[in-house]
Image (cartoon, rainbow, N blue to C red; front, side):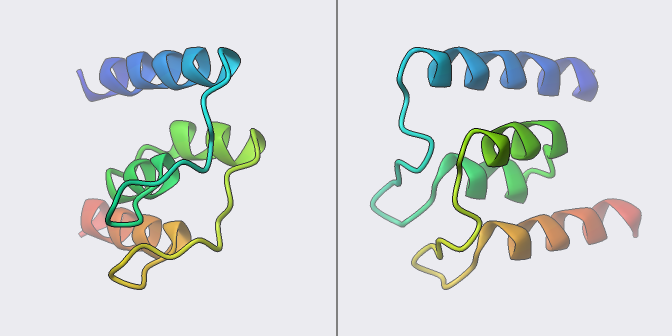
Length: 79
């Protein structure tokens, strides 16, 4: 079920980007789509966003970059 959810998310993100979505758009808390994908451990979505130009160096208001959030998400899954 989780894999199907990630597939649907991947399709939705690709569609949004194909139609001009800003890959680096951020919320008021500094979260980008890459931050969200990283925090949820959605590796395929993360990779797509990076391929499409998402910046891995942007920090959210908590001071975290997407790679830092992905590392935490991966650690939680493997524990």
